[in-house]
Image (cartoon, rainbow, N blue to C red; front, side):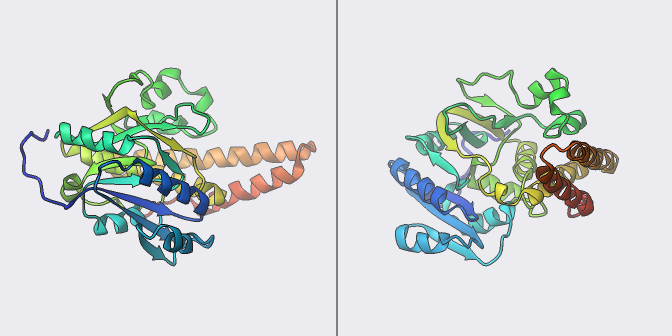
Length: 321
């Protein structure tokens, strides 16, 4: 664990906010407006890494948000690489990774900065993510086990042992006070710059999903605490970028899961998990074909079969596998 009083480099700013954006112009504009109104006394910068948007996002930023540092890419570089590009340009003592489909509520930014300033052994902090309807979004986790991976985010999750899923989603921890967790979802993460200097940037072999899990594991292994701070609230419109490419979302999510297990749990678990995930898609194809055969929404069934077949054809082999 890190000790109070250790030397800190002078980074020049209180906070650097990194936003990786892809074709969510209206949501991005709203996000930036809430950052501007919620900055308070913080000396901060915002770096938007646009990943090849074709919806006019770069033009909007240049015209309406001249105070934002724009890095306009011609390609979709993925979430971890996009954030790394932003981090390498950042001058803040703290780095915040923020999704473009979020809205900062009140003084959430100042609360998180203050918490890190007051707790020098905390390396990562994130606030409470809120759905647009005001309900609480699950955003804190324990590290996954093989049993968790077999059920979590598959069609079999409703049949998982309740204790297994409850433990993974840290549902036993209070929601009204700061608590230590294993990792936090990447829609909103505030990290000490010195922590990044110590453990390194995000693993770019993840294109999307599980990169924050991997990063938090490395940070926690280095002795830093990871804290959920519920008083700092942020609205999150879930998946507005990834829903534009449904097949790739399935592929990227499962490849990321497999990369994590290969990296931290070995080839045997990763191979077993890969076989299970592919079998899931075979089962779904059979199920959709059966529903189509009896005339139930045949057009929808054909679309799903094509999508699941594309996932199977990918082989779900992550980079470095």
